[in-house]
Length: 169
Image (cartoon, rainbow, N blue to C red; front, side, top):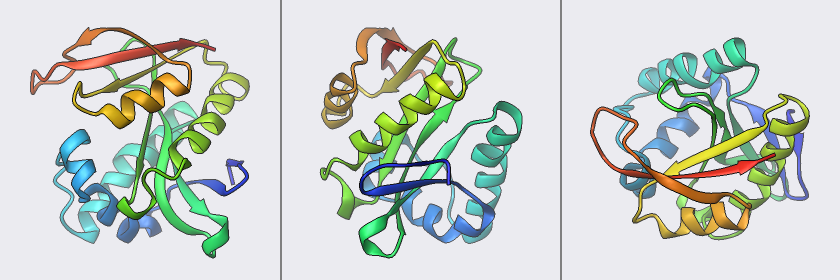
């Protein structure tokens, strides 16, 4: 366990989470707002976890965490965590939920715990987040978390313009 909130347990992802992760990255909102990561099989999901979050834990000490819902026998409902992208100067916070758990406050609750970890465990002074301009729910959540819009950025090869939000911790 990495952190605990009133309703959630945050744990590191492992290769055993491949089935959950395969489902998450192929949900309509993930595909629409985050993008197709070409994770189409359990093997793809396992490799993505090894190359992404698990490698980040080893290299940086942090990464994306699995959100387990306490009231439902600790089933995985989403992810929330930190990533240091080469294309951004600062550490980035992100979150994603399975559709049936969206809009229930889990993103806010888990993000608050991750922000505390960023500040206290990882000594991160400034946190950023990127989102598509059309992702109104994400923008609302980032603002509720105290991140403020700074500028438009094009961090990835697809040349898509994203909004960058930031917060001093």
